[in-house]
Length: 458
Image (cartoon, rainbow, N blue to C red; front, top):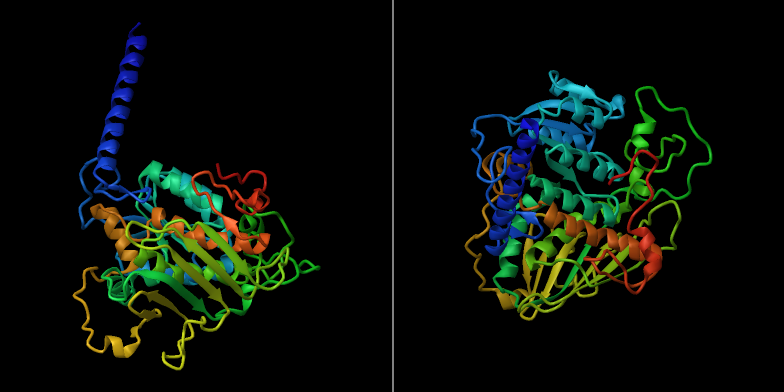
């Protein structure tokens, strides 16, 4: 009888807590604090709903998955935030020497699942710098363990995975950040201010372009021969959720982007960086339509060049916007290089009153004669303390990052839809609520993938 009464009391308390959480969420939603599908209000520390904040002087305990190449660079950035790196994880032990030398006290793992299980209570946050095909699985494992997550771009390998990760971030109310590091640059912030101040009028067209930076973005035909797995490489864990195939040096450690099973080519690699500026400045969400053109589709490998056209609906008093992105292409037609600098990559906003060109580090208004008297605006977006530092600060003090998974998940989906349009050969209509392509249901097979047995995401 006592046990029954205890269980009844616990049940009442759980229902009351659930109702309180629901009412608080509802109130925040009504107040506009639950924005963009992610938590954007103030919560602090490891708990939610107003519990005490961790002291600012207390170090976070961080784990990093993928610690060579880009992962090593991320580790170097985290080192500047003066937190505690307690765990390192990588399936390729050939290139982990530098990271292990930097953090000799950090425990080293090959399998991130074992790392999270063993150090569940010690780890506060996780940084994911694996190849794209493992992003969602490593990120999901961390979110389910109630860890804050920073994940390299693109956030996921498929459109469907991005939807699952956004939902998990909302459910667990974690502080998240996608690794579009240029977002923290002051030049991007000044461009956003100019566009949002209406200096060039209402923007109706944006052209974005970049050259081929990496020769390994296209894998071409799959090697017919296999090679012995090198000592120090756990090939099974590197393959992870992807279909198993024999080891070959063309895939790792750096050439995986050129294969559909592992990456999305130069488009998925660079579009998140360059399209970010247009999405931020114009407040863009999901595109209505997507179409792409490039070389003949290869079943195994990604294209060296790609051009994608997005159509976005009007937002409030802002008109519909056409966004064109090209990787491996020269300037768009609207870019008159006789009147503008010959920038090899950039973003060109076209508005009713003029144009604004930008790359990572500079921007210029055109026609120059029309803006000869233009004076720099008073900054309204604070300078960044650093992309990684923003994430750490938000974890410790509350708030949210500017590239949280609510924002970057939608951006990632738009980018990956470009590859879906290319591979399907169709102009796509996109229904994000139902995760459907109403005019091309046959293309929906490219929205997600089949996982190797034992690697299911949900």
